[in-house]
Length: 110
Image 1 (cartoon, rainbow, N blue to C red):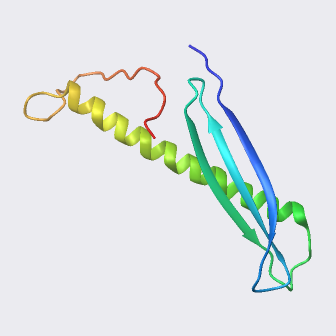
Image 2 (cartoon, helix red, strand yellow):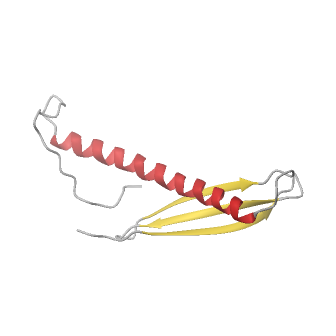
Image 3 (cartoon, helix red, strand yellow):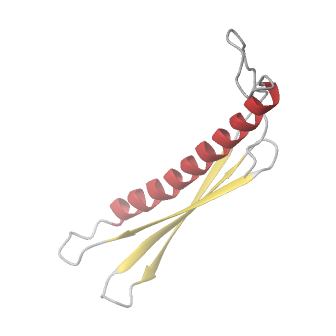
C-alpha cells in the first residue's frame, strides 16, 4: 500500500513591538491521504546584533513548526498503539509472548 501525505509551510513576518526587528512565523499543515490534517507553528526571532539573513529565520521557524507536527504524530501513534495492544491483549492485560501485532495504516487520531 502506498499513500502520499502533503505538507504546506506558510512563512510570514510580524513586527516585534519589543524591538525594531521582525519575528518570522511558520504555520505548517500536514494533510494525510485520507484528508486528516495536523498543524504546527514555529517562530524565529533575530537578535539585534545578528546579521539580517531572512532565510535563516525562515529555516528555523519552519523546522520548529515541522517538529511540532512530528511530536503530534508520535503522540497520536503511541495512543493508537496502546489502544491496539489493549484490544489484542490477554485478559490479564499482558500481550502473550510470541504474539505479533499488525497495525493497519489508518489516519492518526489527532
